[in-house]
Image 1: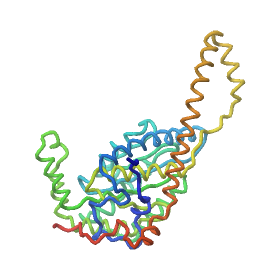
Image 2: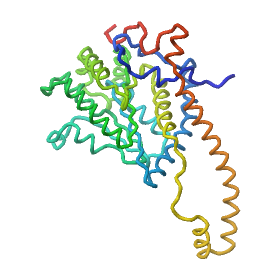
Image 3: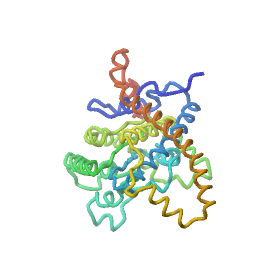
Image 4: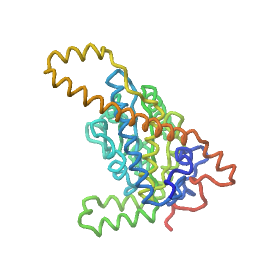
Length: 347
């Protein structure tokens, strides 16, 4: 049996463009993936090894003065699966190289500053992968729906775009993910939380309050996506009714972002042979011989690992280089992000 793989590049299929229509977005679709959930989990886990390798290279390059970093922004209604992305995607990487922040209701101190103040303070440093569980976009979603401030929304969108352009110019690759769950599926997930004592802690009465404003939130999301998906910081609309697909898609987006950096191990400023000799003078000769023997055995393994890594990166970049939308057009098909199914209403 052939190994399950992406049939088309999800970064093309899921990227929000000028014609994106949230009302017709099929939230149960699986764009670019024709296999099932079991195969998706296997593929995602295999990508985990590649993510771990690239993450370490990112961190190592920062130690050598590099400025590159990744920022993954997660937005979605309650139950959309933001926490699952953190556990199942970020969980495959070294936590030392991650900077995870969750943004809830602003504290008194945060309210005393500009709304972007707390966001600036949470941006990842060089070499790290930052993950925002909710973000500055709460200030064009919750704030707008609940009418918490008198705001010129066009100006706020423009301000956010300028901010993200500045962040991108600092060496940050920005990946913005909108996890889009349907009204029906959200109801089922909330009810399951109420039916399980071990999940009661995840439910609040505000969940139902927010659900009662579903249509207003969908309008706010449509406006947000239309005005803030830019070249420097694109939005990706992820169908979230199938949690396994959302996790798979975000894994691929992060993999592509890291692969595009073309990371190699940094050159060191010291002379390796000189340092070997200096270190050897502090060690027993037998210990030195043992270390050299072990290093020779490991060197062959490392060379094999590097070759495999380069092949995997090449495959990721090859997929990302494919113009999936052109392929769809040639096949007479519609992009999976814009089917005729209506998923934003109340059934």
